[in-house]
Length: 251
Image (cartoon, rainbow, N blue to C red; front, side, top):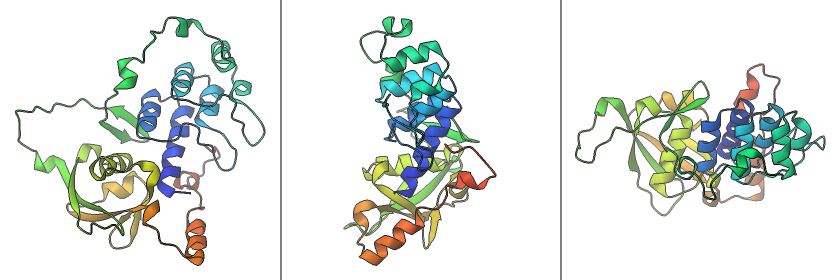
């Protein structure tokens, strides 16, 4: 499984677990699978939101296509994990009072949420853009310039991308690369800081320096032999970084 995709899916389940509505919406907007399940316990973001009785998170997950019938490894549905009556109504498919009051269109805050966000201790907060088309000045000291390219592609040259240092996170790097290179997160296997270092988390990205060369490893970039394929699968089945912090909760 794609390492970066797994990390983003884990972030989605964690955001649902803690009721972080903005982060849930932002992750889904960049293409994270809303029905992604944990490899060990089978919990999805909807299981966590229902278990913690976060009505708003359950609502937004269902809006974006979360599967109400999805089962954990123990055969549990999200409905079985909640004690909130209104959530139970949503998961049963019964229209709640909140849904009856909803307009027959998707609200603007869902359809066009802000794309700029920053991560601080795992919580994504929206930022307000103060850009002005008439203001061409760039605060060089407030940005980092990185050189990126797709590995093993027909285009060997790098392009330069700018990321505000205040927003320098793993998720922001993925988002910017996807926008500039016209790719999607689900196609990314890993992000390599040349010559030989894999970027996995916010702290890795925060250590980057100006004009660092970065390669995006894509699924279609791999030219694997059967032996190479087995090696790749082995490397990407190690525990996520979040499980190495004496945690007992599996998101």
